[in-house]
Amino acid sequence: MNAVPESIPRASAIHDASLAGWGRKEIAIAEKEMPGLMSLRERYAAQRPLAGCRIAGSLHMTIQTAVLIETLQALGAEVRWASCNVFSTQDHAAAAIAETGVPVFAYKGETLDEYWEYLHRIMEWGDGGFPSRILDDGGDATLLVMLGMKAEQDPSVLDHPSNDEERAAFASIQRRLAERPGWYSELAQAIGGVTEETTTGVARLYKMEREGTLRFPAINVNDSVTKSKFDNLYGCRESLIDGIKRATDVMIAGKIAVVLGYGDVGKGCAQALRGMGATVWVTEIDPICALQAAMEGYRVVSMDEVCDKADLFITATGNYNVITHDHMAAMRDEAIVCNIGHFDNEIDVASL
Image (tube, rainbow, N blue to C red; front, side, top):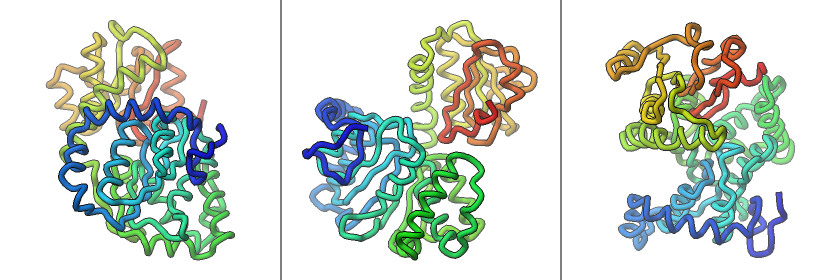
């Protein structure tokens, strides 16, 4: 990661500040594509309804997120930002936002240790204060607060990480516990609520609620109609093919593609693959969704029966290990396996 020059606040951790100009040009283009946010600025900027609100954002640091950040600022909020994924940051977007003075902690290819450190840093205001809101995607920022509070009462919960992600998260929390006892409880008390963007993060919140460990109100953004029925379906329909092409540059027409999960995301993926000329099969455990797939003309199958027959596999379930090591061992040579969900544990990559 390049050193941050004087023009960028030293509170930020980004890849290359010289990319800010490029980022600013793309932000201007994105503003034309995001009339909803721009209308909010026009209508409410003078009233500054978010004045006094401190927002800790954990959301993919992309050009589109940059438009969101600047909208929050225009409405009066103070913002600190980190990405919710180590690979999703667009470095020119991060540079453009950091140049405006917003503390940004994100670059493409962060280590897991950096990722969890950056999540802590969005919670730490320069005057020693805390955020009043969390804007979360995937639930890691909320998990950090809740797990930190739990560890204050029982440090042994951090003793046995089960994977590299937990190792990095637990180590980061242990450092804060040693440096600032009671910090997580103070942080949780200051937070007035969280908004959660995605299916997997919402599942985490409901689990916390059932267990009685969710200490502040949460808004389920994912299940709002404009998210689940538009972004999940149409957004994924746009991005799936783009992602596959960028990563592999293969021709999709004529191939057999299996979409695992036929929820809103899976529906968009199946449409996109069919539109590119692929033969699309669907796996689905929900009988209503499976029937929907069948009525759309897709063959409904199980992974066990088709793992050795298809060319592309796309997981869109939000569940754990839906593609196992045995499935991958049976696949054709150079089969493409990809996940369009938030976390990488839908595919048992660790077993490889």
